[in-house]
Image (cartoon, rainbow, N blue to C red; front, side, top):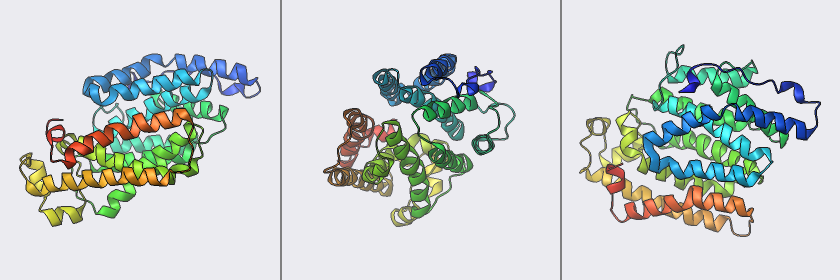
Length: 315
């Protein structure tokens, strides 16, 4: 992985007095200098789980193509690469770079970088710096969304491997910060939609989180993440020891929880459609919502709601 070291970024900070056209040319050249870094991250994602990430990467590149000379596509590709890598460090999917105690320490340093405005220390911070310069070209500030996402990833890094069970409210707050206030609100800004529409998309974002928790259940549990609320664990007889043992495929309480969650997710998708009546998103936004959030989640949860847990247990 290229992120282990530091690549000196091309100097673009002195371009503020240049014309927008010259600034964008310089920023595109800077983005091109990180092509190998992006490819290394995408390659690792595909090697780890090709079916899970293939179409997401295709979608990012398609949006970049549609964006043409606009910096929005460049922003999405570079910002996603940096945040994906940080997420992989938090989850233990990428090796921890030298100089850090653990994933939590790594993310703490990225938060310090965002807050301090100090020069970038590695490729990841260079990509974030580039992303913020690109965002400035279309007059959008992503600092709050970045802070929300990083703090939620820090929560994951802190609980990794510990098989802790959290209350429903604790998990709800965590995922709201990550999925809704961080990701959905940020995506709306990227696609030039009103960020205030995030409340309309909230039910779909919550449904997508249920989809991720079901789809990634086996992988999450294997590294000590438990996304089942304490209230549901108590009600259905699910314990950390049962999950830690790996001998849970026949547990009736767990199977009941899968079905409940799938049914809840499908109901949330319907709620989203009710809330968005009368709201017109741009065609590219509608396509991104449909392909990136809704279709796969709906198909997956429909199967689980019918009692088919194959995709959960064989993931």
